[in-house]
Image (cartoon, rainbow over all chains, first blue to last red; front, side, top):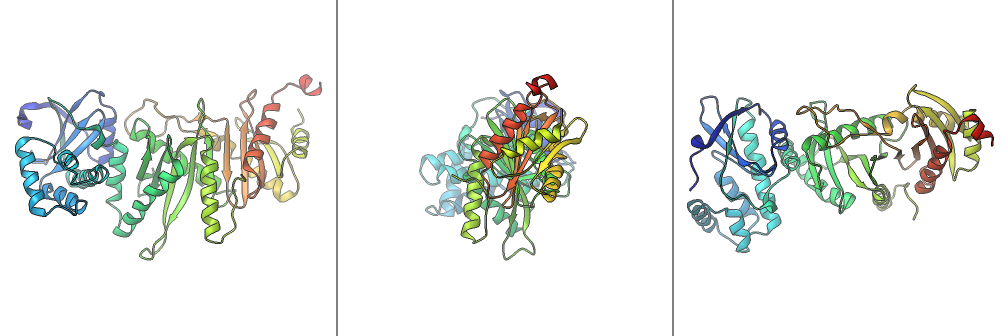
Length: 306
Length: 134
């Protein structure tokens, strides 16, 4: 039986106003810390809870969004009825067992689909919890065993998914397509992210892939580097140029390029920046992929010769 | 050291290279260049003027205040800017890290050969005058 939130709260009040603040806080935590960020409104009512473990976000729950997780899971589990899902949900709540892990164990939902549903639900919840900008956030230590690391999230994943939720439906679909592009560009061992430039100065990630650096701040640093390098390169190079720079003290490189995401539903292509870290051969692989893409579209191309 | 002469000599051995230039990233000056034509010389000079920023990479895993993204970048040893029309390859001189060499070739040139050549040219910089003559 889990103790009520009020009896376990540490009394520490955190300056967490945005999802980005939350990511920073989680990244700076002691790696062994397990607990909950309790989000309250101006009149001290609990709006929801964000579960944290090992500097990762397990999931976020907001008042009024409990059924939303069931909807998201049902969308990924066509073999189960809404009533059956509700029944499972109730039973898990009573027994204190994680619903998602039970669904995976029973083969109702594939692990990747559960992960996607949890991430989506967490992003939706965080927007509800933090978007008014008037939240009071406290830290609450949680005893007992933690979550399965398989279904927890790097803070950059959470930030990207949260940022994506502020995009239009068309743009969200396009951002979803970047996931596949990142995987093929960065492959095993590397990591990459797609950024858009919002109203703020720094590019914001909307998709991430691979073995991400320790903190979201590092992901943002690479996005900022990429934006600056591409802006600079555009003063003497074409807009489609790829920039790569050797990472000192390693055999890896930072790489960046622009991506225009287009769709009939958009007035103009959504300008994105792709950036990340890959092996020394990575830029060659990416250039080949880009060249092949240009060949398919009949446009002359450059790149590495084999 | 006559940097224009050194660049001219280097360009003769450059595979598919159209131009080469060397920038002193501390002073911000382009201190030598050689090219097949004037347009290419300008292209190399413009690219060399951006060498300091393009050879800098973000420093990851560094401490700092939350949300602070402006930590000092670190010096990279080489960089590439590649489009379908042009390739710019940068390499820092190991013995004089303030010097960065940039080679320019058309977009259909071999990137690997170009960067290898630029690294060799940069590797040859930094000898003092006596070493250069012998």
